[in-house]
Image (tube, rainbow, N blue to C red):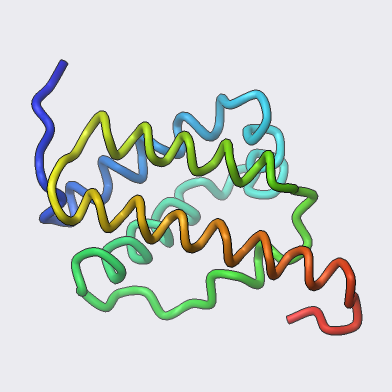
Amino acid sequence: MQSRQEILTLDDIKLLVDTFYQRIQTDELLGPIFNERIQDRWPIHLDKMYRFWQTVLLEEYTYDGRPFPPHAQLPVGSEHFEQWLALFTKTVDELFSGDKATEAKWRANKMAIMFMAKIEHFRKNPLNIV
């Protein structure tokens, strides 16, 4: 097992994102949803995720998108968010340690909670889609 390191550079972000999404793509529950939506656009998605986490964790402002709208119509429930978060946490814990690793897990948890609540809200109020 490799030694765990701090998340300090864009290369660290890329390792986190690439490892995490390799797991997502082969996951029984999440793989079909992600692969159907993203199809052959994985390089574009991964680049966007590099920029997102680079902005969030390294405070290098390379992401200027709106993360929620692409997720608003996904056919997902709490079990999907729990699995997403479990895979993310496992990936961070296996690869990294330190304050940024802790922050990454905290932020992922907050995003999962927010996205789940917003998706539920839009399902109950379909005319208010983003």
